[in-house]
Image 1 (cartoon, helix red, strand yellow):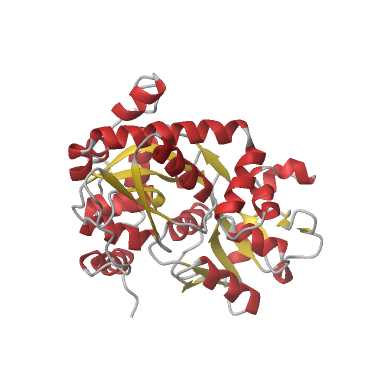
Image 2 (image 1 turned 135 degrees about the vertical axis):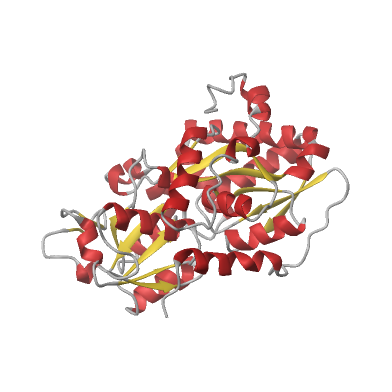
Length: 356
């Protein structure tokens, strides 16, 4: 029996009422419990901003998760207060649809998803071995009839759905979607040949390409597409109302970190490698590919900005609903769950300049 997409997601999101998969991390008064994912390309940003916040006198307790959904559960329970690059804009829409009161106070990341395919499936003459990428036309056509791995209910699944829909491929009928919860599961299945392609987050995707068993088929979006929106700094609204000075201090550290890394991508790659288990070479290909003599169009897949583009976030919410990815249209609720005042104070820019 084929379930309606909204029924599937509603079932997944029902787990938000269940216990979180990690134990609670109760904070002392005046501290921040910050949720994050360590093995993730923006992890260096989170570590650096936490260190800067601590240096400024804030108490920051970093709580690690493997999946954004687990972090959303923890936020609902009150076990964490804030997240950065853990709960994406897609999951923000899920949260609002479920009545979870959260507020977005800064943007962080855009991009970060790759659609990978086994190089063995690429037509002759269409594989750039140096850049580990497909160079032929109409990449989406290679996905017809293929088994594709990804995490159900994730930003990556939505990117894949949107990419296929834009190119007249039926997600339910024209491919076989295989629910694989983690990046490790996805690339392992690709390596073993149990799936043909996968929708994978950075920098796991780049590492798989470097190891030779995966090729970049497409990023799944162009730079103007709402699917390129990834994640920002999200706060439980009740925590924000009681701890505005703490949130302000963290946003100050967040913006300082973004500016530092924008101006020194080599430092960004080096410090991210020190935080994660990924090598400087893997991070370098994502953040500074020219240094390795590579074509940026096949590697650069992470933009960072503190700005929150309200119109695009609302469009994403509406698109998610219209595409059946979330059970409720929360586009009209989005403005009530973005607070630009912290960024205005940190940057000196107006709400309009920040995307509002």
